[in-house]
Length: 82
Image (tube, rainbow, N blue to C red; front, side, top):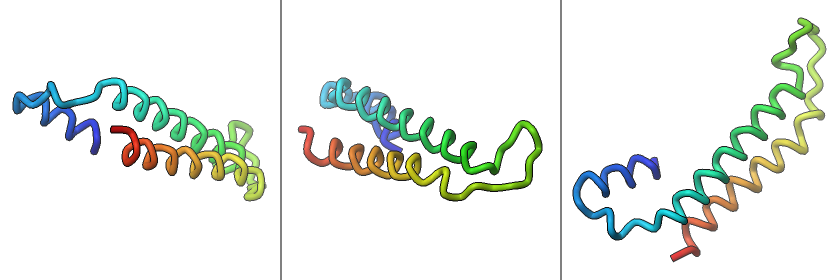
C-alpha cells in the first residue's frame, strides 16, 4: 500500500514531498521479509521437491521470528524516519 500511495503522490504532482531513500529502504526490508518467509515455509516442509509428507513445524520458527522482526523494523522505519 505504501508504494501505491507514493505512486498516487507522484501522479497528483506532490512527488517533491516524497523521501525516495526512505521508500527504497522500506522496499528492501520488505523484500528481505518476503524472502525469509518463503524460506521458512520451504523449511517447514509444506513445499518439498521430493514429495515427502513429513512436515517439520519447528524448522520454520527462526525464519518466522526474523520475518516478524523485519516487519516490526519496517513499521518503526515508517514512524520514526522523517
